[in-house]
Image (cartoon, rainbow, N blue to C red; front, side):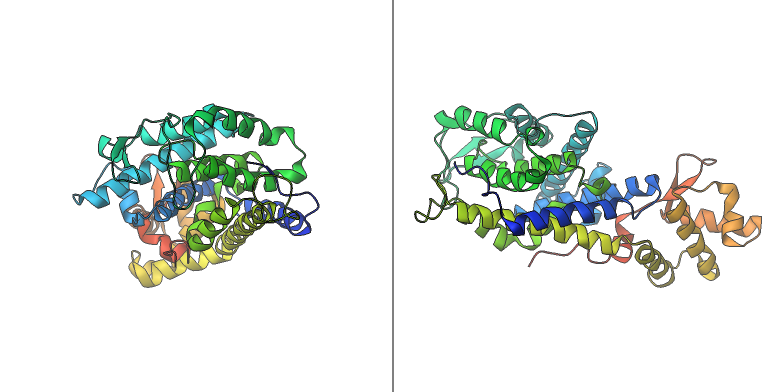
Length: 389
C-alpha cells in the first residue's frame, strides 16, 4: 500500500493544514458559553449521523433521528432501520469523544478500529447485521471481527484476507499521529482515511468506520472545534468526487515519475488535497452559521414567523432566548429583568418557551438553557441539513 504518505514539500497541502488549524481555533471560540456549545455539539452529532447515512444511501430526517433518540421508532420498516443506523452512529461518536477526552491512544490501532465496528453493529437489530457477497449470497456481519474471506468493492479488489494482519500492523504503526511532527499530521489523517478503505478490513461497514476513526484523529489534533463541525457533511455533499478520489487513489503507479511505491502517489496527493479542502470548507461553513449574530437572527425569525409561541410578547420572548444563548443558562429569577416584564408576565413567557421546547431545565426551579429540537434547526442553522446533489 505504499506510498503511505503524500510526498513532503507539497505547498497546497501545507497551506490547507495551516488554514484548518487557524479556522478551527476561531470556530471553537465563537460560542462563549460552554453549555450552549455542548447543546449545539449534540445537534452536529445528529447531523453527522444524517450525512453518514446519506453517503451509504439511507435517507432520514432530523425529526426521525430525534424520535429515535427517544426510542420512538417508525412503523415503516425502512424508516425504522434508518433510525437504528442513526442512533448507533450517534452512540459510537459519543463514546469516541469520551475516549479522546480520556487521554492519548492510537486511533489507527486494529483494536480501536474493531472497537468502533463492534460498537456500531452491536447496537443494530439482527436484520441489519446481514450483508451480501457480489453474487448475492448473504452472510452475517460479526461486530468487530476482521473479515475471514475475500471481497470485491466496485472496481477495487481489496487484499487477500490472509494478509490483513500484516497490513493492519503496518497501518497501525505508520499512521500513529502521536509519533509524527504536527506539520504532517493532517495530511497523514487524509492518507490514512484512504488506505483504511483500500485495505477494507471488515466484511461490511468500512466506510462508516473510516469516517468515525477519522473523526477521532481530528479530535485528537484539537481541530474538532468542540464538536461544532462534521466531516461527513462535506463528504456527502461532494459524494461523487469523494468516491472518484477514493477510486483514483486505488490505482497503481502511473509512470516512473509517479512516486516509488506500488500505488499512485499523484492520486494519493489529490485525495489528500480533496480531504483537507473538505475539512476547511466545513469548518468555514460552521463559522458562518454559528456567528452569534446569525443565531440571534435565526431565533428572531423562528419566534416571529415560524411558531409564534409568545403571542403579543414575541419581542420579550426573543430577548429571553437571546440572553440564554449568550449566557448558556439563566436563573429563573432573571427572566423578568431580561424580558422587561413584570413577574406574572415573565413567568408566562418562560412557561411558553418551556412548553414549546425552546428552553429546557433540569427541574421546575433550576436555571433554563437553550434547546434545539428538530423543528427549529432550519431556522436557527440555515443550510445545515441539505440533501447531497
